[in-house]
Length: 290
Image (cartoon, rainbow, N blue to C red; front, side, top):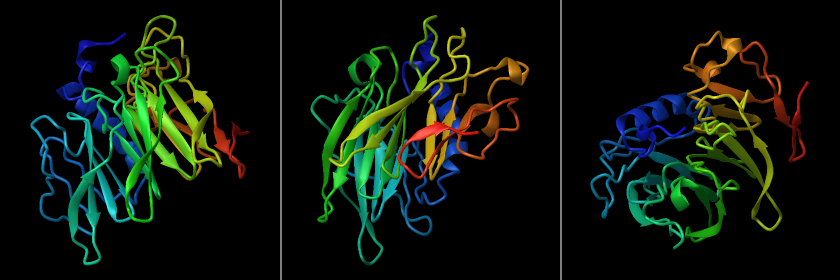
């Protein structure tokens, strides 16, 4: 099902639930040095707070600061309300200045929510556009050259034609790309959600590896599995803010363990009776753990 409040990411209910669910996964990325403030349109970078950073061209409702990621001296800040990602670059003296915006492919329209989530891995970045093609969703990948110029590497469109919001959440680490599609419908017409894992090949492009589904994927329940994702080392955290499991005595997912499926070797979730623990071996594959 698709409640009316999920039609726009900037409505109060969706913004608050999204930020609450992301809190646990963002805690895994302690190196992130950017504070997001979508409503105020303010960002800060470096060792501590600085003056407000507001680029030229930001319009009312842009949602500047809805997402942010650090890539070396660059800070990428999303403004999904106008489908832009602004780049702030720190010079040798430590001063940051807005330099440019990431080039948006012509197929990614201004209504696509481009910039709703951003992830970086060294000189590679990924930007979500969940409202692309009537909310089917897509992600755009970028590479940065030695001169500091960001160029489009490829665009990956949702592998499902459903109302999926593919790209609502993204994670990028060690040649792996994770994309959440929290509105992917199950056979009963509910937003069960799904998460898609990709690996980077020798040509630099990303190819699909596997799909993760929530527990009880056919349940008559809007789970929104994949609303937030985080990938750090061998830990993949997937949030499902609407999930309610019988094994949880009917409690709705609210905290780190009850709102997320943890996929890593040796990681358990004490609020769950059982846990499926796929893990990444030394080779670039994912397989079930013991």
